[in-house]
Amino acid sequence: MAEYIIRRLIYGVIVLFIMVTFIFVVMRAVPGDVVTLQLADSGASEEQIEALEAELGLDKSIPAQLGDWIVGAVQGDLGMSLWSGQPVTEVITERLPVTLQLAIMSIILAILIGIPIGVISAVKHNTFIDHFLRITSVGGLSIPNFWLGLILLTVLALVLNWIPPLGYQSFLENPIVNFQQMILPAICLAITLSASIVRMTRSAVLEVLHSEFIRTVRSKGAKERVVIYKHALRNSLVSVITLIGLQVGYLLGGTVVLESIFSLPGLGSLIFETVSSRDYPVVQAAVLIFGAMFLLVNLIVDVMYGWVDPRIRNS
Amino acid sequence: MSQVHLDSELPVKKVHIRKNIRLTKFKDDCKRFIRTQKIGLVSILFIFLVVLVAILAPMIAPFDPVDQNREAFLAAPNAQHVMGTDDLGRDVFSRIVYGSRISLLVGFATVIISIIIGILIGMVSGYFGGIVDMVIQRIMDAIMAIPALILALFIAALLGPAIQNVIIALVIIEIPRFARIVRGEMMRIRETNFVEASRSVGANALRIIMRHGLPNMMAPIIVMASLAFGQTIIAEASLSFLGIGTPPPNPSWGLMLSNASRYMESAPWLVIFPGLALSLLVLAFNLLGDALRDFLDPKLSS
Image (cartoon, rainbow over all chains, first blue to last red; front, side, top):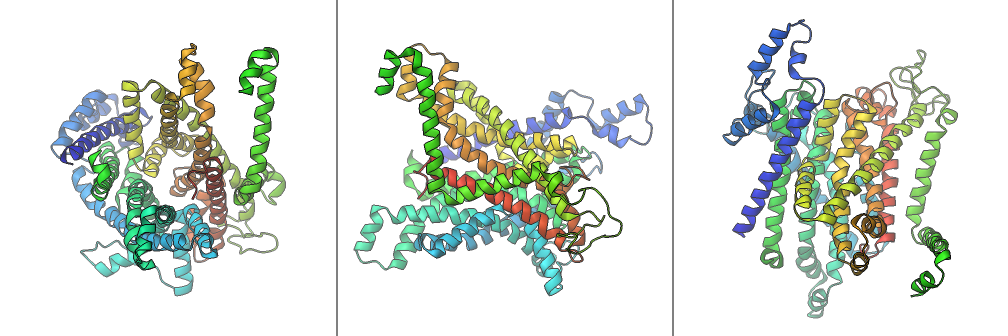
């Protein structure tokens, strides 16, 4: 198991390295650079431009810049913002908790909604309830989550005359205000994710319910409840966990738009704010963190997978 | 066996007969799809309807989509403006009709381009294997590890707001997804007996790929294309909503929703109609994808 995890970590580092190189090169290859932007209105001379480039370390070749950045990153130094001069690690630690909290709340909500509905759908296989739940879940997958966010805001404002409190406050500062600010975007993200969880749970439970060991469990006189929750659901959880790992990408992507609608200062809105001003170090670090989160979640999922199912662990 | 017989006895008619067999099979498949996949059929009809609306937009839309009417700012739905007007007095219904063009154009262009590039990359990766495959796969993994919308945001914001830039960003996201399917299928097909047979009679790599690879992997590609179409339409709307997608004054549905978010309380119709159009079109593509999967791969449907 340890060897497996180490192998996966090495793979993760390689993928992250390629990712950083890709972002690094693309950002610098595209027209428009930070120096031109910063000196846009001042009518700066060639010398001034060169001086600023040297100051920001942008006069070196792209491979040299990449090398410098990686050497720093390994030591935990992600550079400074080219605009504010604030250390990037500081910017990230300010923004990351918002996005993390949003993602975790949505995953929990999605599981709480998705798994029971999926089980009901499987147990009531091919009945009216099943058809209704299946169509609803495809619907849930098709509604853009930012539209859902707008609808929720509109309805709450018009019907209950309530809007989420303005000015973001972290959970530690004020849990009640924080909850009011986070719950709506979390619901919007959770609905899409729960729709795919419903579909996966339904087909996985159905498959297990048709297997032979379930017949054995039934024949020894177990209650239907025990058959479904202790045996069928438990055996289907492996595929549901895998699905959640793969869907984390969509979830993290969705945070950008919802952070923008609900004015939350998260990592997604950080990229959105800094990419057009070409603040290279900040964008690089933020995209890298998103990639690392995705890889980490999938590593955890794979380890859980092996832990739940011995056949995979030993292969 | 009859095919072999025909091939050897009647070499002149070979091509003709093959074509007929394929055409008949295609017709049968269509009939079977219509009979067994009612929801899929309804989805196709709905998509056709939207395509028709997009093509005939100038005849359907009662107003010019960018024409500002100073007499009717934020007018609620009425007899003249069935879906009301926006903050510049533009007719919402006409904008939605024209907006279908942008969604379909971005969806269609993205899916076609990424299928072509994805097939090329996946074929090379899956056919040759080894070090080529490994390098390509790690690059694809790296792109796929960045959450799709984050990557789209990154590329679209770098390139600036324009429809072609949205397409470029979305193509980069979709390529690895198609390449992965094609690679998997190619590796599976490479090991089959008929490819072995084909290789033993001296067929080269290109011929094997075109003659045996491609036709045998159309099913999963078609299913994926339908689902990718829906995802792409949502992504375009999301980027436009953030202001880095389709530039104003184009009537993109995402852009309309972004504008609407400022008038949620005073003009809720601005929020409702573009979102509804968007959701219904994506729903149609998702249902079509499900139906195609059930139809083409009965193993997967329970």
